[in-house]
Amino acid sequence: MKKAIKILIVITGALLILILGAISYFYVAFNNFSLEDDYQVQENNLSYFNETYDDARKEFRLKSDELILKYPDTKKFDIPVLCSKDTNLTIDFCFIPGSKKADKIIILSSGVHGMEGFAGSAVQLFFMDNYINNKFLDKTGILLIHGINPYGMKYIRRVTENNIDLNRNSDIDKNLYQLKNKNYPKVYDFINPKGKVKVGSLRNRFFFIEAIKEIVEKSMPVLRQAILQGQYEFPEGLYYGGNDFEPQIKDLVPIIDTICNPYQTVFAIDLHTAWGERGKLHLFPNPVEESVKKRMEDVFEGFHIDWGDSDDFYTYTGDFNSYIGKINNDKIFIPMMFEYGTMDSQTTIGSIKSLHVMIQENQVEQYGFVSEEDLKKAKEDFIEMDYPSSDAWRSHIIDETKIVLDKSLKLFSELEF
Image (cartoon, rainbow, N blue to C red; front, top):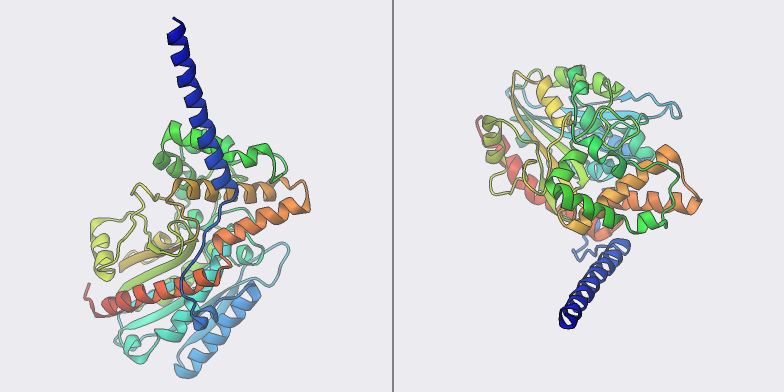
């Protein structure tokens, strides 16, 4: 009996050591989370990046003016986005028509998720400098839509002034807002904590324990889908898609419809950041029907596509690209989302850290903060997730973009659909 007790004590002690070791490892990895970038910096690449919404918009307008000088038929215009505290928010457009025989158009959009629009704006400026020429315009028109959520860009949010995620709100049918995400209520308390944010609280420092518990109970793919799919019941919650069209979503319909009308094939690329391997350009679309999938695979031949129903990604409702497709439902449509990874969110720690950053940022907006330091830390983490300050990361995503666009735009221009 004594021998059995001794063995039990040894086993229990070993288990405790393992548990404490695991907790210590995750505590350090979670609370000291950082990622190093060792990519080569190309100074010219950095010239496309701006730090404020006003500067990004100004640069887009200047590039549009340059294109007007080269291609006089180019149209530059904007529409206002109403906001209770700012009367100078706009969505900006640059439309370069193709030749009279052009039957294709490419749409390149940025800023659906506010803060992510800074990287998207940089990619658009790079595109305007490097891919618009007479040969391309002979077959293809181009529409650039800049800063679709200007409020989020200017006021450091992913969502609109109404806490609405435009990539869950975009549709032409209000039935979208009747959809039920049946699993979201099961994780509501976990991802929408109440009370003022104190970054250094025990709950925040040991958030990973609660997260791992949820992962073990539900599995990472199920948990990820429940959270990220989008929901239409909790206005204060994460990934809220609203109960009606946001004003700019309604206002964009006639513009997109009119501009795309002369063209038979529409290729839409929407620009995002955050999800996926840091520094990598993920091709990350929602699942589509087989005929559309085939066209996408043809255009992006040789590149891996991370379909939303794979284990490391997710599907979502009310996305902007599908909305463009519905506006152009009588045309050949090719959608793609470019997702520039920042947090290694395909890893357990990266995924947990990404979620925690999102939770804290929303909690600050909904319930406030204990101190200015708590506000500063929550916002700094949020900015770094959506728009890393690393010159190496910024330079590298332009390099990644060039690799993909050099081949895919050539194929798009040459292929017959």
